[in-house]
Length: 224
Length: 415
Image (cartoon, rainbow over all chains, first blue to last red; front, side):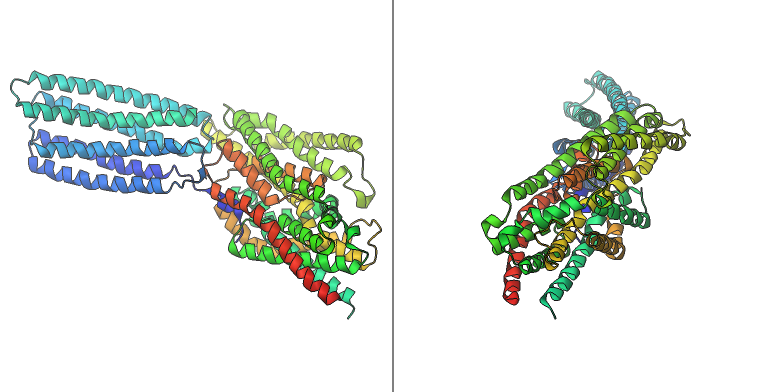
């Protein structure tokens, strides 16, 4: 049938990003369980959860590929195609970091110094909260498209991006605190463990950094 | 049987077929945005289309009909034989109809307008040689095919940017709508009235010059916006404190306004596209009645046949396409549909008044893209757009060749 008008309107490619975010949150939320098991000294549990995170990360990758492939080249979109692709890779990077945390913890079994346990758990909570704030931005996409990327939903996006930025800053501060507690133990800790811990803390912190980048990407959408 | 009778019969059937095709497909395209946004149910869309297509065809359709009948091909250059013209125009209808049928089957976004114009050019080339075709008129028509989507796009863009800035994104959209609504109603009625009045009412011997028609058009627009004030007041009762709810309600008001633009689009389509079927039919009728030289107006009955054919096509087959389109165009919200339809209809009515046969569908597509550029649409498939551009370069040569071939056969039969 000759209906150019019906074929003209393609589905909005952004909603697929919501599916990706759901998978990424499912993946990153397991990091909390991972750290709890690590604190409890259950290395078998750590290995098991790390493996599960890896599986979940695979699913997130599938969602990422689905989101990317559903974005044909010849679409006129209200936002720059490259910005959407960057958004997708930033969200996906959160899950990648979660997987890396699991992998690092299985390479060399680590034990958590008693002083560090509460700070570490607080750190992970703050990071996960940052990611949840980022996902609230994704929920705003429909409203944003609906309003032509301006007006009240655009203001809401900027507010939410600011909240996200503050959450990331909080996570950063706890990370520094965590590192301080860690290096208080430097005499009683093998250098290799110290090295691994630095890496682990950085990876967990990176999850929040990528979540913050999601916010920056949204700022670009609204500004462009 | 007399050859004249045979030609007349074949021409009538081909014309009806063409009109049916226009009704089934083109009108569905024109009304699709209203059905998709939910402004009109399919049944109501058909009723609106029937009434306003009819009105557009009868009141403004004559100019485009004349262009297709006489403007493209210089009838004097074809020699004195009226039968040549009768057979040729019949061949044009058949060629355009066949091509449309093929395109519909294959899903190509071709235009009924382009098909018939191409066919008439092909016939003219074979019958009277290169000089028989009025290339100046043809150039204007071809230029209008590029300009009309661009203009529709520009109006759609400006319309949606305006709606976005002044209504949807302000603190109190419903209050804004109360103020701006009547101002938006004004151009719709003014342009409609102007197109009907300015040398449009020839059949009623009422055609006015620009000055008086402009005055009456402005008055009509003013009256319509005055009437819309209390109506809009009723529709914009602020029921909720939630800002999102209020924006949502503003969109609901656009549903009401979109009914207006839907009528406008149907009218514009009638004024422009009915001529595609009617123009050649009128030429055949004129030639067979031996009135080739006399400057007769397009017979009203012929316009009527075309309009009826379109409505029948809409009711019998357009229903199906409309249902498909309604499901597929849900991305277009009422405010966007309003902006797109207004841009397209204004462009088409203006082109019709200039006697330029433009493509309704292509202009509407241009208007929708304009709304897309105003960041109003999630995503627009540019593949469809390039398909449309490609169809400009294919349709005209193809129908020209087909009409030329058919005419060569027809001429053999005539001799």
